[in-house]
Amino acid sequence: MLEQLRRVLDEELGVEPERVVPSADLRDDLELDSLDLVELVAVLEDRVGGKLDGPGVEAIRTVGDVVDLVVSTAAAPRVSGS
Image (cartoon, rainbow, N blue to C red; front, side, top):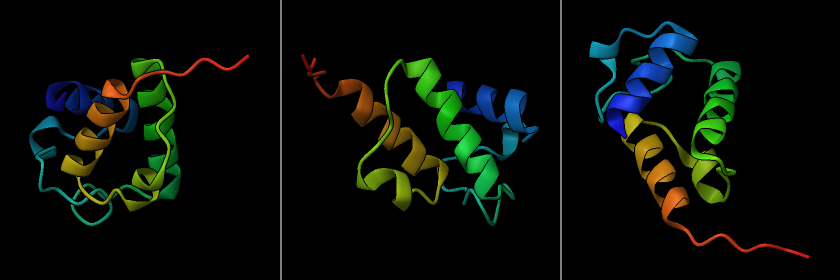
């Protein structure tokens, strides 16, 4: 997942892949603003085919947080509503 996130940040937001390490702060180290974070979440939702939501989205600060959120979302069972 980290490699995929590196590609997304590089392709979509111009962040150099070598800067994308689990401990990197999205705002302070990678210099992403709130619009960048919204774009990042949208792109990741498209790639994983599901919505990234819950308390995790507001709490993400680091690259590791993003990886954990995507992995937990992808692992969560899907409930179809009728």
